[in-house]
Length: 497
Image (cartoon, rainbow, N blue to C red; front, side, top):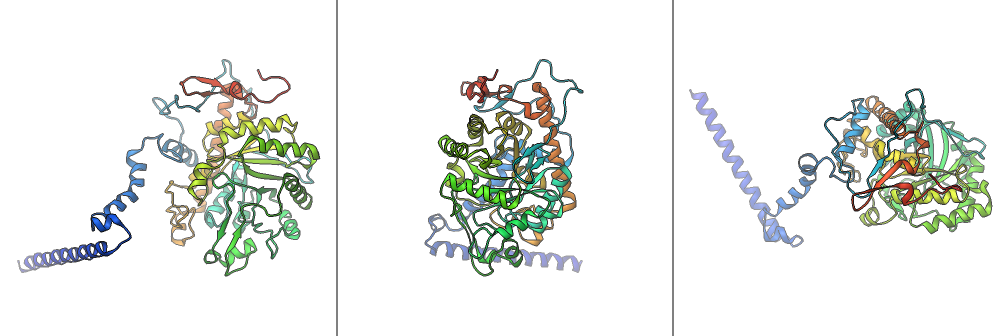
């Protein structure tokens, strides 16, 4: 009996003490809020005003899990993300009852089914495609779907390693991003595209200029198949960056060939390139030194710019052309960029891709310059549309982030990524188990490729690169759809029928 009474008295004391501490804390917050001068809400509504910021922070979470419909979220909705999750985990991607997609939204792509599609023995998997026929070591790329640039530094060690091993398993290429070649990129033994950013990380001399000896050594890696000169990316065209000294570890300094203890600047463009001719000079120089295919990555701002670029190529001769052009869309993603650039600068890949493909083909360079589409293309319909619109290849970064387990927490720039993908916090990185995640990367790639091939067979062709704009209808503002080849016909000496 005494023990019970004592327990009740102890609980009552603890409750009163807790209530007193809570009252004291609220009083302290009240005084702080009333005296501070930086926030009008907290000053006018002490303590209570703090809930505004709490609810704003939690709103993102509640919208994602409780309130947003499957097709409402941005930048990627739940239906898109869950398709990637099912594909990467090997689950069935069949759905029941009916589509949740609103087919009346302007811009929606609808594929034209054939009345007599190929039988099971009348279609084939997509053939490999040659890139860089004039290079000493051209690249026979096995897959039309590959991994876009994500730098070590922007993403974590286990994320890079899982992508490398997954790319090898799926027989696709992995772009290093502009942060240079890390040991994790080489870990899996996959084909690599080395991206040359404006800071020349991994290839720079003491003054930040391109070092031919380092370039030659990089090309000596058998798995480095191509080099991509980055001019711009969709999320921040025309914007450079600063890697603060505090974030430069000895490993990053060694990989990027930069000094410890001082900020590292990435210019907003290559300082030595001031014209199309100088860009073509750089492309030819890198191709001559490395012996491997060389291309560029950029964002379309206008049709006139690309006409000027291809005019310069024709004037100098087809041998001067880039072996490929990676065309990123204004909807592309990144770890961190100013909102005005993310939202407002650069044409969407949906608009730019058909235009650039036509300009390339008008100049007679269809077989010489391969076109790689990038920018929010993560599901089979997106990729199939891009191939029909004129792309030879498609690359994705965020699709493969979802395959790694990304939950679109939108914390990429805060070093607090809960899935361990974009953080360098060792505790958070432990959640990303490479042996499990690399298989998800490979399954996602294979699943998407297989379903794009299914779409191709449905429209009546043997493999995806045989799809044409006539196989896609685009929904207009009045709800009706029009064949894409009527909106923007493909260039051909003979009109497309």
